[in-house]
Amino acid sequence: MIKEIIEQAVKAALNELGAGDAAFVVSRPQEMAHGDFATNAALSASKALKKNPREVAELLQEKLSIDGVEKVEVAGAGYLNFFLSSDIIAKEVSNAANDTSYGSNTSYGGKKIMVEYTDPNPFKEFHIGHLMSNAIGESIARLLEHSGAEVVRANYQGDVGPHVAKALFVLLEKNIDDPTLKDISSAYVEGAKRYEENADDKAAIDTLNKAIYEKSDERVNVLYQKGRELTLAHFEELYKILDTKFDRYYFESETAPAGVATVKAHPEVFTLSEGATVFKGESYGLHTRVFLNSMGLPTYEAKDLGLIVEKQKEKCDEYIYITANEQSDYFKVMFLASKIVFPDIEGKLVHRSHGMMRFAQGKMSSRLGNVVTGESLLMSLRDAAKEKMVGREVAEADAIAEQVAVAGIKYTVLKQNTGKDIIFDPEKSLSIEGDSGPYIQYAHVRAVSLLKKAEGAVVEKAAATASSLLERLLVHYSDAVARAAQELEPHHVTTYLTELASAFNSWYAGERVIVDGKIEEDKLVLIKAVKNILGSGLSVLGIKAPEEM
Image (tube, rainbow, N blue to C red; front, side, top):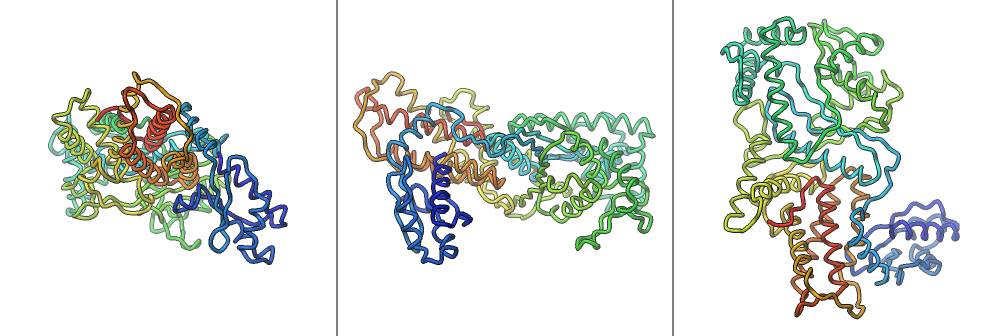
């Protein structure tokens, strides 16, 4: 990448000046009028060289002669701005037009990384948090793949535990032996309410929970299996819509035994307290967590410990967890306990937390039963997108509407720092006139349409001109992807794509692209480059790039 060439040249110049250890960055200026790249190298090196930063910048300027860089300017207190030549920009545009892998890099080459995300629980609905985790996790997985990593997509699902017992308790009581998805959802909501409000029901559900673990009741076993299979199959339908396919499925019923065995094998780490087995996090400045309850059953903590046992069989360099930020303190304790038990895993466990999605009524919870679920939000946006297409001649309108709905949700989730809460506006999420996923999709559709119109046109050479803002912007796609992968922050890509789509729309509005059946070659190449980069960027975000809308 051009950025790397500039970094190497600056590093060499600093070495010549005797400040080779100075830390610096090369990045895109806030305003492109100030150049294509900029560096703070002079400011960083000034202390070591005992010179004024601007003086150091001037010394560096004299030493920097870089192929593809037309000029280097000193700016402000000592920044260096780099302006690329039209030839190198034209070459990058051509590469983007002819190479569908343009923008990929090898920063994670040779690494095997597991990304765990989505994690819905059988017997419960697919809620907003699962939708957010899926959007973020899928994009991070794709960013890492785009950066050369071997990625293992993992999905960890709670198919045992109190939530299952709460649903089965109501289904059994009502003699519903062949439940529908609606039956299961309603039963869980009712069971959760009764568990909190009725001591007898709570005791009965706790007893049922033990029976589920022990598989000691045949009727319970049969109903459990039916409910599990039904909800898991439905999740697969949603994954298909979201364009997600997992490599590994882990279930709490399978990780629980390994977790229990690990806890019992390490009494020096997990100790008895009031009948339960706990990890005393206070000793490390954290908090205590229960791993085995007073009935000897594994809690989420023990099952997560068993999950780590299973995950290590993949022999990955990193294991990334994507969950809500309300679990951040939980994972601090979990990772610490895991590191003590498995010293070799230190530094390999990464928790990437995300905020909450809120509507006007605030935070939502699947337990309450009167909320917007992830699935219902997805379906309502699909219907709204289809309604917007009424009157247009669009082939496969249902499929396009689904892709637009997914884009509306994913882009809204991914366009800001993952740790922040989101205020979701359904209307804005589907807009093709602003900061939205469909806006990017529509720019891609426009590029496709222009290329189709150009198929019968005569291609002509044109006189060389200065590089346009759009052309200069294309050069930065690779850097946006690399930074997003390095920081595990997809918003760097969404920000770039929004700017690119805006620049393309402005360019289109100000240019006569096809005139009298003729198109200039450089314009044709530029449109191809824009189309490829928009398509690649959307794909990295886990969003489809339709050819009509």
